[in-house]
Image (cartoon, rainbow, N blue to C red; front, side):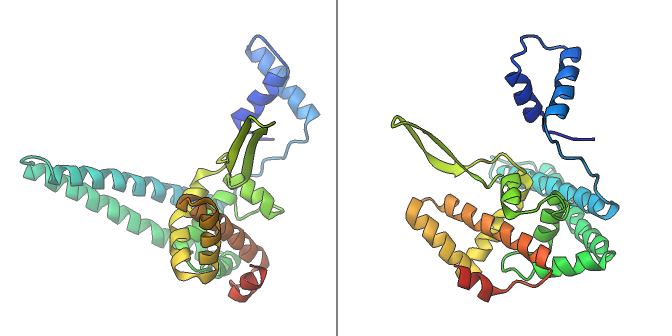
Length: 252
């Protein structure tokens, strides 16, 4: 069985120039696509990785909700004559969400400890400056522990960090940018680690400065650091060795 994104099947259907759309036409199109293309087989997640993925996504949802309630509480505190009961309920809701977030991390650590090989690889990933336990397990959960990737280029494209260009003759020449056609949860998980890495890791600071000097856009520089951290996580996981700052310094 193969699982594809809807935009891929829609693009193939558009190439066939079908003017009508029915269930029969769609079924024929999917059958034709499976015969003409070498489609990858879908492999379900193992029990451990599935549990980690559910917990990581639940935590991300709760953190997003926390931000919403934090903004609401800020608005209530600065409103004209706010209701005390309303403020208390908002604070109580925020406290509950914080407790739920704190309860998920021990569950994640317990799940990782059940697999000695996975536990060791997570410890190696956490040796990268700026990368903590939550970031490490989130990346592994969203990539199925890199099971489907044979190269860093595949991983970079999957996360949406691949660079795209839009140029035609002399009239169209847009600046290069990342495609963002990938797993947005990976990019979101790497945002704050990149900020921390720039402050604490001289190698990442050099990458940031080089891109910023060229583009004068801080976000592009941070994205470059995010991409580098993702590649380092991939290399560290595959080699099953701790982060070696001398190795990356020599390459840079």
